[in-house]
Length: 103
Image (tube, rainbow, N blue to C red):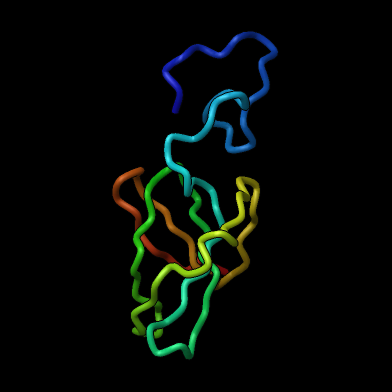
């Protein structure tokens, strides 16, 4: 979050955490990212629902180890609405927690 006070009528970023004219401190903030299992049998989209870091390697609910792939395809989506069962990073900026969105 920005330390600068927002000017009256200055628009906020869609994430609501800072003025729209300022970038997020973390480049992966609020992005949809693809992760693929190391055995290639499972690919999942994961939404980073926070302004924080994300791990390169995660474990899917299936137990398969997965790696962040296609970085150029990451899409900024601060207003994304996850569906039940979608994977979402929650937690603090430096402590991401992978959770399945409830449904």
